[in-house]
Image 1: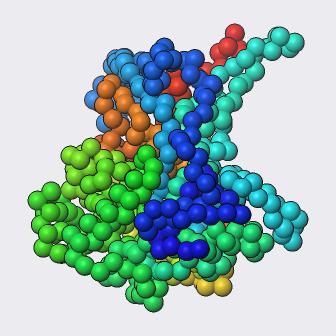
Image 2: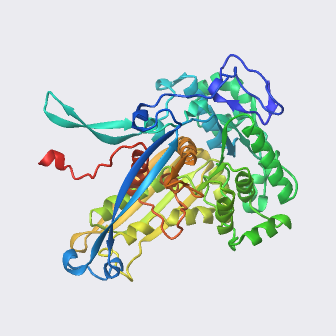
Length: 546
């Protein structure tokens, strides 16, 4: 059974049965009749267990240095040269405990990431096993921060050894989060191929697994998509047999109708762009008047901007997983005015995440990282699209800025006038390797007495198997953050705590962006902990030393 624009209700999915429900939508299995709920271990933290909220209070202490030191002009003894004052701020954090039935709409549903996202979640929901040349494999969520990650939450006393021991808790148990196996999934694609055909083309998942999922995947066909060929590679035109025709306003209206249909089936919706990288759009759309003029007069706009505007107008979270500059100043302001949420840009899943870890390690050790050369080749459709320079430049810009805050962190290694790392990024399209991306990096550093140290790394992995867990995480945490308020205000319009998952993160303060892996993760984890009412660990380990 097949329906155009099929909805996959994973929470009720079954290999053995299906039922068609609603106009132009398809659900699989039998409705559970209600919203999924689960008891949270940390509800005892909530002072009002009869309510719907977890409330916590957190006091943050900031060390404020005088202007001379902040400019990096003084490197002498701290106590002799600087005035440091302590500022304390109090924050009241409120989290709605009610877990919604969540609809996830993917732009690029039939791409490698989109198809793998659906098939992988289905396999986990159904606890599937499949045969490979290396034996029997089972579905898992490895690579997902929320589903497989843990955080250091505190300590417990071991009465036998008379010492303190570490306590690590699963991330997903810190606060009430949506279970990915309960997602309702739909989306758009410029290709009308069903998801089984898309999975076969992608060549990411094992044939035996796809054979078991064939019936489910064949029943899911993407909704017609917005398509603006001038903003992506010309080699994508032959796939575009499932597109929305019309003016900017007509396309946005149709996308809003699609989103509203999904909203009618669930409590909340998230729209996630996992489609082709678009070319950078210049000049910037910097005012609301200019944005509305371009829309109303049918100026050529990237598809991502049209999707984003539709999501903002429907007040649903929009996540940008590609490097194009969708979030123009006017778009961010539009989200602010509408009370909507956005986050991006560009999945940080492999080579770039590793790069931020390496820069943390080297510069944090007092080693002057001086040159980084990153090369990768891949043969999937993402690589094909990036083979045209206009699209590659968006990716190069996204990857190119990830070392900026590392340089700013050390004025000894990078004084004014010498605050630069030679950094280049090369990407090549090699069809034979498919989704199995090869990434080679060379890190050259200056060490003691001007010696040179060079580290090279080689990474090979299916690109989509790295990206999909991040997609799951940003959907789950993004939805959670829309249920949170700090001092009575929402976290938007930009959900900057999701920066951990993006190469080119945007924030509510555009002049303050962190790319460091260590600081991004620490910020995200600490925010989740204080929201759950857990004290932060200073890291001094004094309880073990005195």
